[in-house]
Image 1: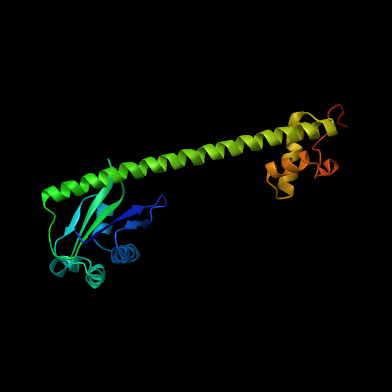
Image 2: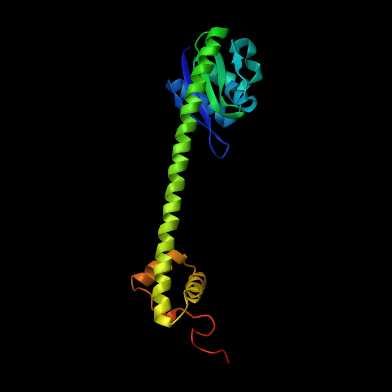
Length: 209
């Protein structure tokens, strides 16, 4: 093989070139993704290996890709799916400078390499997702702590119950297009005049008329 590369399906479904072993291979794979044509594109769609032993004779299936491939110096193109069970996450692209088919042994080796890469990428994505989820949960927890502190300050200032204080903070944030956590932080820092926060309904200890 003259060159190889990896094209991945992003979480939004779009394809993107992850890596290539040569500048020419990168240019060709970027072009294939752009024009949505070529063995690698068919491979991602079907989840099956796609092989073109000689672009000069078999290339008319992908005229634009074939023209670009030959201009880049490639005469054969093979695509091996990167999949786990039914999930296809990308494709391993093998580009040859000479015409030639993949025999069973080389196809099996290519699929084994694609499988190893698939597992590694999925594990990396799982770790990233876990870290992102952990960060989101920590942010939510921190925001909740800040809001609880602000509720206590407003409740004490206005002789309110904690529920009344929360309602007042929430309504004030909405009316001023603020995030509740941002308002709560301002209350704790003493940057918000508590008397400007409108108290809904009668305060604790007051009787409705």
